[in-house]
Image (cartoon, rainbow, N blue to C red; front, side):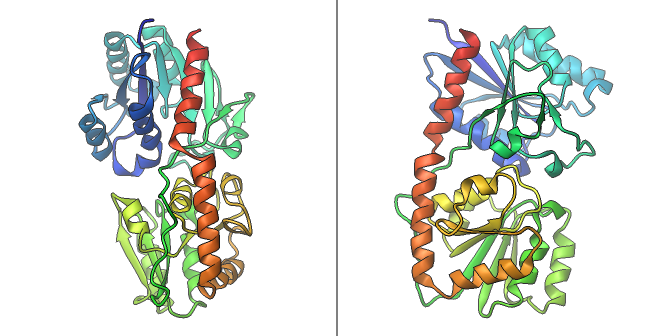
Length: 348
């Protein structure tokens, strides 16, 4: 049996694309090496993710292709790279329509389009429903994301996370810490979380991430006189390590295709309080692994955070239930097995 070559295409190799890159790293470690080999093309900017992939022995090329069809030179670089790699499958995690057509014309490859978010989360001006045009297979990271794809029924494959052996429990006498890890953008709703913390006594809020909203959120924190109770860490490379100091995870998003950081918190045994929207409704079991609250509702967010803050036994019980759910339903093995099965069907 010959080895099939799968080329994964990422939009960026910089840190902010970590959530998407986790799927590629998982596949790099778990695909059957006797049946598949894996390479990566980064369309735009190289960075820490590209370097991490190289350290794992994966071939990585960067195209500097920024303009879609308008950037003909970038498209030609992409086409030449594909012709030299001769892939059987091009697995696109970014890029719109142009890379799909180039993949088919330049390499004759099967094209997999993988959506990891809702259109509302996009950092570009394009907010329309996504298309399955020119794709042999469409994969979505949640039912919510799948519903955003026009005239197609994507295969839903949830991201896999590495679960802790047991839920962690901090010193019950320590100040309760609520954490959130996100790109600091309006769609993440962090302002509502800061507003909720105003009514919680003796709670420390850690905001891990960076983005265009950072200055506004820092100003909001100062205006609420929360300067000594809120910490902005900036970008965190090892989010699992950062979460070891957190008692509760909060995800107050306005739109969310899945919520990979919330899933990672669950895997570490941390209860989650999240907006009742998008893919968050698919991973958090209300009243069991945490709480779901209406989006943009600081009062409800505060009420459920307070319930957990004041009850360490409830935190422990929900944290253990969260860890079990992540282990049983969102493992890296489940993700890689589902994608490998999809590859087999494509190449049959």
